[in-house]
Length: 375
Image 1: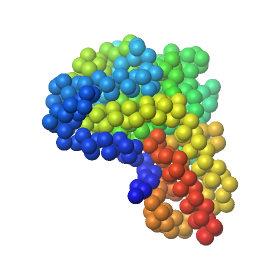
Image 2: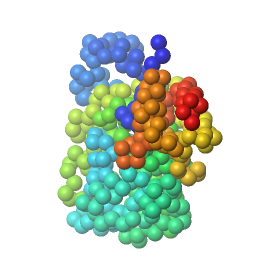
Image 3: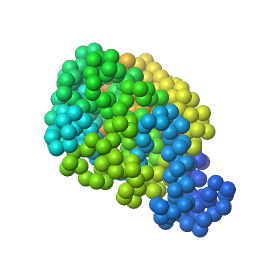
Image 4: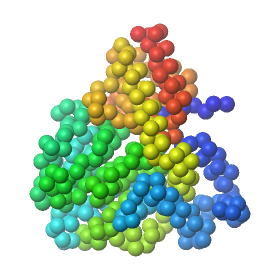
């Protein structure tokens, strides 16, 4: 029986074969040789040999998938992207001012999540808006050449994919080419592992796992080693990147089951051909859906074409009185979680790595039939 297609923005759909493997291993996890250990992953000590083998493999697979250079540390943390909105300035805003003083951080506002990041960082640092597309309804990304970066900024924060507004950086900005000494901090929560990363332009990237990497509970931080050890004196020990790195992400008990699930997804991604192969699939899925919207008389996407997200596609019915009928019919057709975020309304289809092309084809077919009968 075909499972429904889940277009949720997060927590999001996971590959069916990964869920089946986790179900098989729930009560009795097998090691690499197939020998069962008598425990489920949730029951394991995070310092026992069984879980340490899971952790080590997951970290190695992720480093390979994302081509993370050797001078970057991979940290498995908790709290999601919202917690990192505080943890990043606690660790990096004092790169220039020293640990006792409030440092400076710049923000490029391209949607709801970068707005939240800016607001939270203001509790721990002096913040400055380098650029904003708010006046355009967050339907575009200001060109990097137009950014006004504070000369005192320790870092510039961007959200490289905005799940609510549906805008995505197609390339990461090169701050050095702009004449800035600031580090680039990237919230890549909603498109991590969906496309390659140019690490030469990045100082730190972070993301919650619950969109492309697994269940909620795990937060990934990839940070260049020379940026460790600069935390504000008020930074809690469990949030200090240096402390987390020194303890291999086990200063406190890590989210063991979420790490295990993420590790299964890393292995699944490798079986698909890695990030390069999955990026081509994501491009095909997004092009199919955007083409259906653009060729329609009923649906509209308001994002500038060169900034459109491959992961999160918001669209609106020109006759919004039909919204409830559209959603009801979609549920009956096995197309779930298509209602747009409450702050913007309309519809939203999230096309994360686990969404197969067949799911997008089913959505497009439904949209075309709905327009035929209601347009």
